[in-house]
Length: 106
Image 1 (tube, one colour):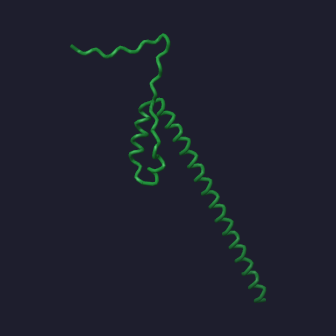
Image 2 (cartoon, helix red, strand yellow; image 1 turned 60 degrees about the vertical axis):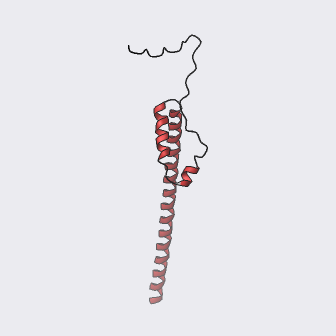
Image 3 (tube, helix red, strand yellow; image 1 turned 180 degrees about the vertical axis):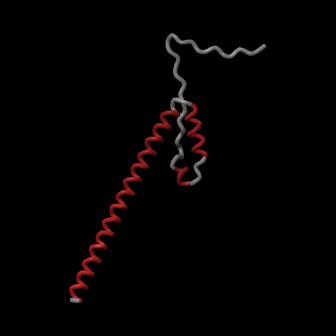
């Protein structure tokens, strides 16, 4: 009888170890998927911010302010040579005249 009980204990331990390994694998997969979703959100938001900065000076100033907050050297290196976007003035249309300069108060 003790041999049979020992075998049952060993089998139960093996099943418990296998279940623990399956749990760890599932948790690792869930963490990997969460990191991928987080990275994707950051890439999308970054793209939207850059696109907005090309059209609106407020967003260009936000990018400049954020880049000044980068503290890690390796993060700064990722932006070496990169020019933050800024709105380009729209060319005047054929029938458009440039705006008048402000008049001095006198």
